Amino acid sequence: APEPLAEDGHGGMDLTDVPVRWHVARDPEFRDIAARGRALALPQLAHSVHPRVEGLDPATDYYYQFTVGRQSSPVGRFRTLPAAGAEAESFSFGLVSCQAWYHGHFTAYRHLAEEEDLDLVVFVGDYIYEYGITETNLWRQGAAVGPAHEVEIETLEQYRLRYALFKSDPHLQAVHARVPAIAVWDDHEVQNDYWGTLSDTGIPEDLFAHRIAVAYRAFYENMPLDVTALPDGPDTDITTGFDVGALARFSLLDCRQFRDPEPADREEQYAPERTMLGTAQEEWVTGRLTDTPATWNVLANAVVLAAIREQTYGQWDGYPAARQRLLDAMAESSNPVMLTGDIHKHVAAELLADFTDPGSGTIGVELVCTSVASDGDGSADAGNPDLWLDHEHVKLYDGRRGYVHVRLTPQEMISSFVVVDWVEADDTAPKQLAARFTTPAGDPQLIPA
Ligand SMILES: [Fe+2]
Figure (cartoon, rainbow, N blue to C red):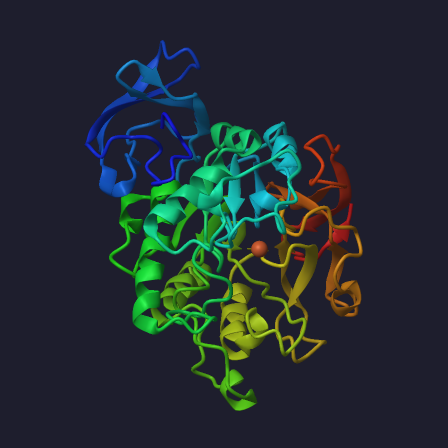
């Protein structure tokens, strides 16, 4: 895009179709081409392209680049997954969420991009925020934005511009170039605390359906999703999954589109038919968990699964029957792991077979990553640590900014909770290790390492 922050959300492009060539090579100089193709970038999709690349070798390093005319993109790299069922020695990923660009620098991404051992980045929601950016919430020192960014975003053009603004960060760009990404959304990709088809601010449902439609469309345009996730109006399917040989199975969950509304009373909250994922998605993920060849069964979702506080309706605490069904399915799989964001705190928790029965035993673990920038500098005890740490199943709480680095091997999972002490002043904060846990395969608990 010649002008990424053009206010019409089109990056300075004319509203015409643009032919794009893409190349995948075995070397960064593109001498040894493995695959190539063409795609047509349409203004209707903000000139994004989503080509499918086929015929590559498994467990192999590749480089990719897009070209339009004489202009070429920066070079990205990726490693293909091992063949189905193949043994894999290890697989490592960064877990991130909540990148309120205006609240601080993306220092966490500077450090994540430099991790030596990295195959993937997992975004678990709030890749953008919809709020107007004004003097009051612009805490990222040295940054300035124009009037087009000052209002809450509502239109397709405004959502597109918001992705462009957040993606202007060089450290986020470095992470995207370094490894492939997978992503699920949370609420702020549309609007704070929305429930299924309902706005939390009382926008009439028909108008809100339009808002959802444009928000989902901008998410599709800007995120590395397959063409099967192309939205159909306010409906789209971002659930997907893949296997890392025999080592791990990943399943990505949509916790927003299909959730039942906030419960009116306790009876409604505990109703057995109450759903977080919707019937079809619940069946899909149950099938993936109960018939799986993988050592590690990893779910990525936006909101906290572990029981913390009954009145936190927006998390799985608001859906106790649905949580129990998911925990039952997870207990059927080997070594289930839930990846979560949303709360802007690092939390590590063990998942009980039944949270109403403290003696029911641990069936898996939940890794909750703090925000990259949301809520600004933060501190280790920011928020309400007692609420979380009072639970015996919660093993870590830290309110600083950062990311989680996770390494899976056939023997263990090592989760490293990385933090930085500041993000508002600049991007120079060194990385620190807040905590590290090992989770032995076959014994899913969090052991300080
Ligand atoms: Fe957030």
